[in-house]
Length: 237
Image (tube, rainbow, N blue to C red; front, side, top):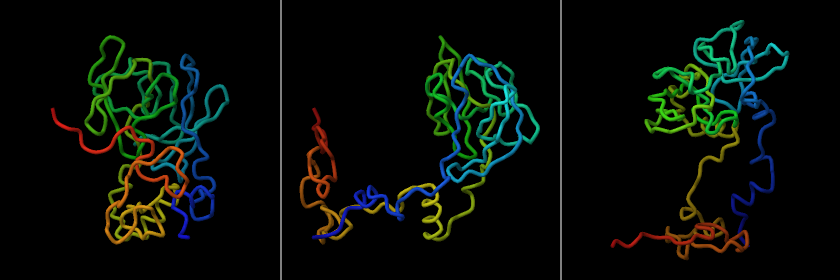
């Protein structure tokens, strides 16, 4: 009869795989109206389980509230500007208003999406050039991205950069760290499992059957390359 696959046990929603409460309850997004200019005061810093960096709680001048990723060096009582062209630490500005070489983070992929890139603690990117309504961004991975000048970003470096410098030492410590942010760890390969645990499991330590699986396969067999067009190496020539 065997046992359920891990993805089947996750779908059941048991306590082992359930998201911890209040983990991702604080949303980090810019004001949806890209033409709206605001100013706000940093009133508090929040340690959110679902984020590696601390968050700053902000009260805007229209009495609305929100959360933003905190940059290194900002303090309570300082003012954060939203889309008014002022260059100050933690402020949200359009890429066209950012000078080249100034560190930025929480960058939008498309204008108005609220911020997608460079959000992990200690990370930052910078603009290398402005050209034809596009900005060339040097990402932390050293790759270059071309984004619209109307995309927004925050100024500075994300706070909490030393969070990963201390070694974890034990696998159990990493288990609790991953469980807190609802990450599946460790990820064991199917070929290293027993036949009762996975269709690719067994003593041979290789798949033993085709890795291509139908889209309509039953849950106990739907592993590997699901509805793949092709697998394997491409022929040269």
